[in-house]
Amino acid sequence: MNRFARALALLAVGTFALASAPVEAVTITFDEPARGFVHGSVVNTQYAADTVLASISVTNLGGGEDLAVVFDTTFGGSTSDGDLLGPPWNGGNLPSNTDLGNALIIQENGAGCGTGVCSNPDDEGSRPAGVIELVFSAPVLAFGFDLIDVESRTAEDGAVVFHDGLASFTIAWADFEAGGAFDRGLAYGNNSANRIAPVSAADVGLTGFDRIEIRMGGSGAIDNLYYDTPTPPAPEPAFLSWLALGLLGAAAARARR
Image (cartoon, rainbow, N blue to C red; front, top):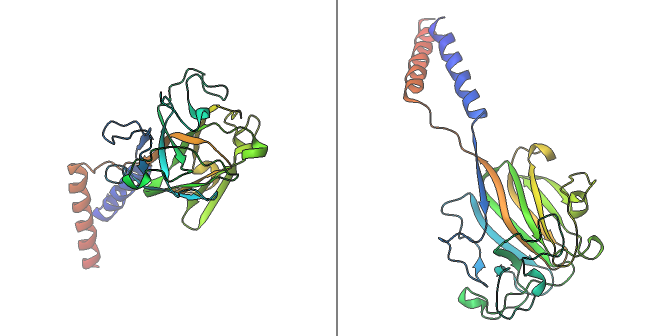
């Protein structure tokens, strides 16, 4: 094999290595000790420094605050929305004894929120409630999440919109029901807790997600945001040396011609 052919072969190996690179699976729980979130914490860019989740933002369609706020589902004090408290849960596809800890809501009021910790966390109850938008600094290859207290499709139908640049794909809550196009066993009900298993970019004809909108059709919360992102391995030193030699050889061969 001449040097030019060797260089091409090494380039092909490198391309294959990147294409088959492993992925990093990440779950955002809102319970991470390093974040220090408490009942009422306002969430926006806290994950940007060490994950690809660059920002979380909210558009409130019910007249309340444009804020994503932590709601402690195990909160033991007085709360404006007991429907978000559990375990036990009163329905859904998760076991009734599942401990979800902190979840994320669209905040309905502004009480105390200027301090960074709202004093009366309460999910927006208008129908529709609004949109939680997740922006990623690197492509996300799959995404799943938990959905809490969606009472019925008729009253609180929502959707997830996956964006890939200018392209997008929408999956309505109805599509996540048993027998739906993206069956995840979603079961509605007051005080319900559901897990929406990850949807991959390939499932919806996209190459990766750079932005995801979770459209809340009414009151409710989300939790355990799961996503996969590529983690290309660093090239081995030996591979780099052979690649450099191959490219130099290819350049020399071209120069002789």
